Length: 392
Image (cartoon, rainbow, N blue to C red):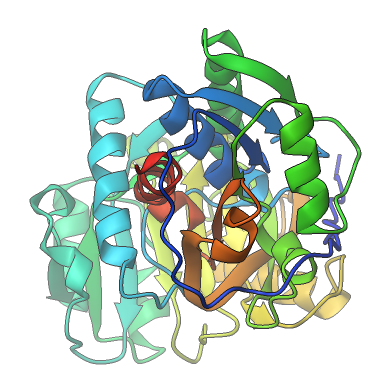
């Protein structure tokens, strides 16, 4: 049975972005967090762990199919987020995820990740973390390593015949996004400093002033705006755009999912694979597969400004080709779902105090614009937002 999941982008309306540098003298003691994606939930948790009273509101639950966080692949890897602060946020997130994995958190899995390249390339700055065990290998060495370590990869000839000669290999955490979102929400609800939680309001604010009014009604003296792409209209932020992604979902534990499957390969470990160079991929149409929870997520696209809410037939055909390239037996296995999401991309993340609104007596922090890196930076971003809202 197939399920068609289409994400709607919500339009909100707000005040212009401030460029002032007014200092704020008092810290917020009770904070309204608006938005319940991964950024909003982790920000609320960070505040609660600092013993700050929190109200959390959102029009839809975190696991509603309309949230980008829910449908995301959950892979830790900085992706289309160009802010200079990203590495710091990402490494803070990596620290927390590795701790969760070490404590046997079922929502965090560490798997081999392979990015195929057509030539030797300089490693990214974030690759220096010892936990990742980052290596740059030629393709022959990679497949030898895969054989020795029981890794499942696309056919060797599929990669070699297409001209890919090298690969990045590292071991990042992958978060089972739907279950992790639900776990964070339950922790928030159970916390003694959680004052008011409503993540099914079905209400969309039109202005930032409306949010400030709501915060005052709840007895709050601080607001953290974590509305993601909604902040484009809410904050009149034309620098924020949606980067549309499309995915197919396959049943990860289907024993007949793989081409040429046999009893001999049941011991193979799933890998995450990405290709962002032709002929199989590009920057706007990356070919990738991520094992996430009980699903294999196959993508994808990164189309800035594209607002189509459903998977186009041509995109579905492309995704099926990607699945086949990556080793799935598409002739005998249908996807169990498909999904569209809109990543909130901004050339510079907006994580800062809004001095114009703060002058009205309410400290306001914006926390949005992380592109395709929400699950990569969410812990570091939450810590910085919490620090800004509680700074004396």
